[in-house]
Image (cartoon, rainbow, N blue to C red; front, side):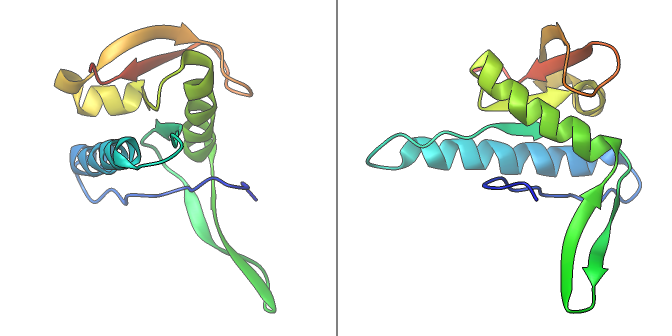
Length: 126
């Protein structure tokens, strides 16, 4: 259960650059649309990572929940949490930066909860 969060997956078929580009574009669209809303400011915190996960329905027949499990999902969630610390709406992992190197600039290495070693985090310059 992730509360008021959304976890979106973009399946990788062959070259991961296409999935990374789709995820980047969707995230940027969310940020842009929230900026256009009238009334109180709406903020988001989006972490984008690419990696292997296990996904599917889990639970008893009378209550199945679709879930995504794995270290890649965990890292995406931790990047989302780090958005609040760094006051950024959108952060990317090194794996995404490797797939889309021209788009990213580093924010350095950061310790993330339950992630071994410091994680280099990237953003798209304004």
